[in-house]
Amino acid sequence: MTRRLALLLALTCCTHPRTISPTASTAAVSFDRRISPFPVADSTGRPYALPFLGGFEHPRPQLVDIDGDGVLDLFIQENSGQLELFQRNSAGAWQLRDERFQGIDIGEWYRFVDVDGDGLYDLFAESPLSNIRYYRNVGTKTAPRFQVAADTLKDVTGVAIYADRQNIAQFADIDCNGKLDMLLGRVDGTITRYEMDGFDANQAPRFRLITERFEDIQIIGQRTPSLHGANTMAVFDVDGDGDPDILWGDFFEPGLLWIRNQGTCAHPDFHGDRIPFPLQAPLETSGYNAPAPGDLNGDGRTDLVVGVLGGAFNPVKTSTANLYELDQTAPGVWTVATTHLLDDIDLGAETIPAFGDIDGDGDLDIVVGTKIEPDNPKTGGMYWFENVGTRTAPAFRLRGHLAVLPAFHNAPALGDLDGDGLPDLVVGQFQDAVAWYRNTGKPGPNRFVLVDSAIVRLPRGSNAVPELFDIDGDGDLDLFIGDASGRIAFFRNDGTPRSPRFTLVTDDYLGGQRVGRRAVPRFVDLDGDGRSALIVGSEQGGAPAVFRGLVRDSSVMVQLPPYSAPAFVDVRGIGVRDLFGGGAGGGLVYLRRVDTFRSRPS
Figure 1 (tube, rainbow, N blue to C red):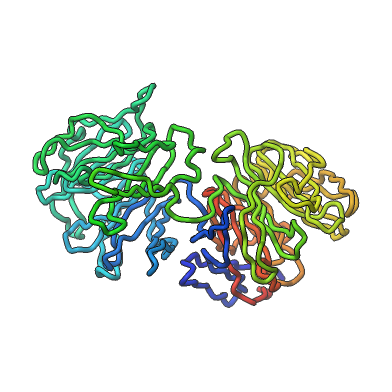
Figure 2: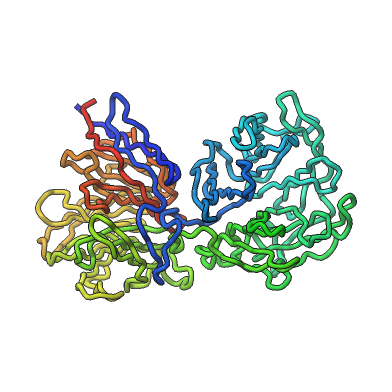
C-alpha cells in the first residue's frame, strides 16, 4: 500500500482564513495564511504592522476604489499572473484582503479603468504573446465581478493589438473628447496611441489606431549611454492647470520624468522638456518606477504610490525601499512619506529561514540568511530574530546581524553538532563551501564562532542550501545540500554526536529526479506516523516537491513564493508544525496548520 499526502493550502487574508477539506482518498495537512499571527518587532522595538507579508522586489501598484466605499484600495502585482488587494481597516492601516484577486490571471501587467462609463471599474491585463485581455465588470459598485469579454483585444480592423509585455499600458482620455485613449509605451521609448471607437458584440471595447508616435515623444536614457527599454506611465494633472500630464518611468531612468502638457485639455502639447520629478527633490531609485496617482489622505490633492520594479541603476539599493508614498503636501510640492508603504519584514532578497533555540531559553528563535545586503553589496546577510515571548506564546524581535564570513546567498541550517545541547549553525552560500559555526552560548552577534569554513563542499554546482537530519537513525546529524541545478547531495555523518565527520554518499540523492532549480531540502514528519518526508522548495515557488523515500508525491498543492525556502516548525509549542517560508521578496510568510488528520492508505 502506498501512502499519499495532500498538502492543501488556502492563501487568503489573515482575517478571513479558509481551508480546504481532505478528499475521500487522501488526508489533508491543511494550513491557512496568517499575516500577523503574533507580535514581531524591528530592531528598535517597533511592531511590524504586516510582519509575514513576504516582502517585495518589483511591486506594480494601482489605486482604485474597487468596492465603492469612498476609500482608495491598493492593488499590487508582485508575481506573474497574481494580483493582491490591500484595503484600509478602521484605523487606516493597510491590510491584505485578497492574495489572488478573484482568481484572475493578469499575466505580466494589469490596469483598472471604467471603460463603459457605468461607474464600475473594468480590467485590462496581459494575455499570452503580449496580447491584451479585457475583463468586463458585471458585478455592482460594492461587489465587483469580472468576466472575460475579449481574450485578445482587437482594433477596428480586426487586428490583435500588441502590447510589449515588459511595459505597462495606460488608459486615459488624453485629449478630453470623451473617448478613452490607450497609450502603449514601446521599447524604443515611443508611445502608440489608440482611441476607443465603440464596442463589439461581446461588449468589449474597440480601439482605432491614431498614431504610432504620439506627440513625437521618444524617451531615451538621460545618462550616458543613451538607452531605452521597459517603461510605464501615469496620466493625470500633475501641476493642477486643468489638463492631463504624463509621468514616465523607464528601465533606464533612475527616477520619474514629468512630460508636461504645455497645451490645453482639448489640444494637448507634449513637446516640451522631460522634467525630473518631483521638482524639489527628484526621485532616484534603481530605475523603472511605476507611479500610481490617488488622494491617499483625503485632502483633495493627488498623492502617489510608486513601485520600484528595478532597472539599470543598482537594484540592490532598492531591494527594501521599493514601494514609495509621495504626498502632495502643498500644490506642486511632493514629499516622500515612506519608501516602504506596507510595513513588513523585508531584509533584502531571497530569504532562507531556520529555527532553533539558539540562546537556550526554551523557545524557538529565527535565523534568516539573505542573498545580498541592501547597504553592503559585498555580502549577503545573516539576521537573528530573538523569541522574546515564550515557548507557547511566541513574540519576536529583530536583534540585527550574526557575525559570519562574508558571502552571497547565505543559507542557514541549525542543529547540535558538538553535543552541548545548543544548536550550531551551518551556512551554505553561492560558492561550494559550507561552513560550520559552533554556538558558544554567549549573547550578541558573535554567538557563533567559526569552526570550519568548509566542513564540506558541494561536489558540483553552486547555491548550497544545507539541511541537518539524522537520516540513518544512528544518533548524529547527517547533512543534505540542495544546489542551483535542483540536485541534492547527501553527506553521511561518520563521526559522532560530538565530533561530526561528513562523507559524501551521493551527489544526487534523488537519483536523477529534478524538482526545479535552487533546491531547498527539508525533512519533516507531516502526518504524525513517525516517518519523515523530504520536502523541497525551489526557484519557481508554488508547490514544493514531496518525497516518501524516493517516491514523489504529486498531490501536493501548496503555494509558496518564488525562490521558496520552506521551514516546518512547532513555533507555538503545541506539537504541531506550522509552515514558514522565505522567498524572493526578502521577507517571510507564515502558514498555520489547522488540521489534525493523519494520512490513510489509499
